[in-house]
Length: 162
View 1 (cartoon, rainbow, N blue to C red):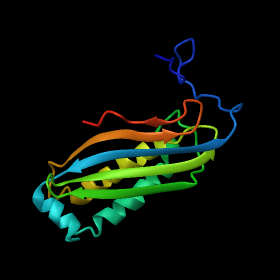
View 2: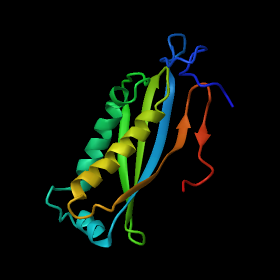
View 3: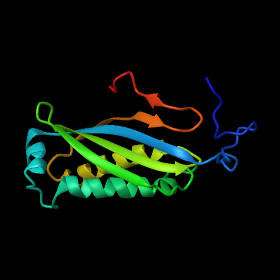
View 4: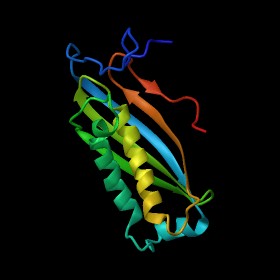
């Protein structure tokens, strides 16, 4: 196992210095799932919620979350995203919505946290907009699916998320 890059030899937390790294194209794709009652699922898809279009609001919130990642995660570098996208994949059989976020950048450090934050914020937004209908909604399976670029190269999840 490699050493944690955000901890120095004295055990102190630090931001990794990326000054000497060359900017390269970096991409990341993350996912998460929000499960709910059949009634809540139908209300979202039929746009029958009191707070408006849930998925479009969650899409905007996810992109905003990606842009604000360094404000939320202490040792994350502030980055200038070149692309962020959030998509939704409803599953009628499980009354769940899979959220997928992708991000791109040409920079000195990776974009994985931005994709993961986009998924998380989108899921939380769906929960917030629908909690009056269904407080038992469950957010799960938030994970990195793929990343490219940087020293560690390409990563593709081979084990399905639980």
